[in-house]
Image 1 (cartoon, rainbow, N blue to C red):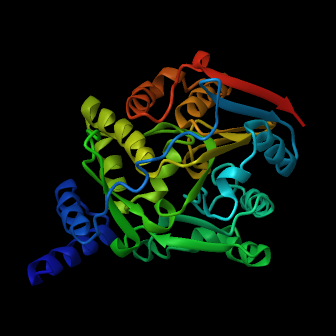
Image 2 (cartoon, rainbow, N blue to C red):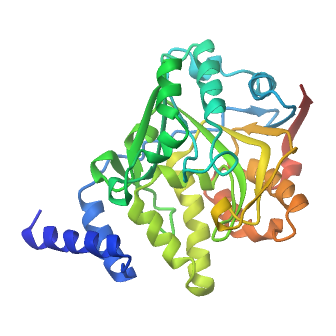
Image 3 (tube, helix red, strand yellow):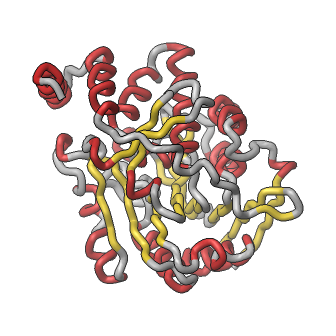
Length: 343
């Protein structure tokens, strides 16, 4: 790396810490950051939805209050995961975007319950990994500490990794010619290189994304500069909104989880953070599981629409249509086999 690039990077960091980052500075730094991320063939190229029956994606909706029992019943309804997980390493991708409790973020005890289930199903090694922050922002692991995730993981015999979203060496450069918004996406190595990826999402209204669920949860697997760039562009009119909505789908496409589990026992209305005016709605008592992120989000959008007067399903149509175009699933629930059970 040249001396001039090092100076530019330091200037970028100063601007970021002072809160005076411009879009131009961000885009310049992104070029330097991505130049240092190693490039490999598209790792998840051979991904296929493992939960298909009679040509239709399976979507399981479990109603109940005991999350461990709901999880077990839901996976059993999908046909089990022993064939997917046995003898393999797995990574659980939670949502630890903030030091705020569930349902702003993943229920840490539920993350451990998933890990315990994977153990029983024969997984060789289980890791819980997210990259929601950086030492640049006051500590990459403070959100994990808020949830006591390290202590819970140690007790359960599960490795917990708080990735640094700004450390380029923790990410790997991925490309797909189909991506229209982000030709290159740097994805967390621990997550994307795992033989099995478990995407554990919560259901929330979101000011920029309109809704945060299984597709949006993959933001925490991507290099921070790309995430920040998308957020900054989201406020730049219709084209900026379209860029952001497509970015949600592209980030999800770069990760391609094997199974998606939405803990909707409680959900967030109006906003994704309590500190921004979000409202917790309890008593939903649902868990949604499957391999099709688009179908899951389409189903969950109807749940959110039912309880949140500020949200409508069509607000996420750009994201869902584009995700469908990328081959991640279908938003047409008539083309999905929905299994509803109560435990």
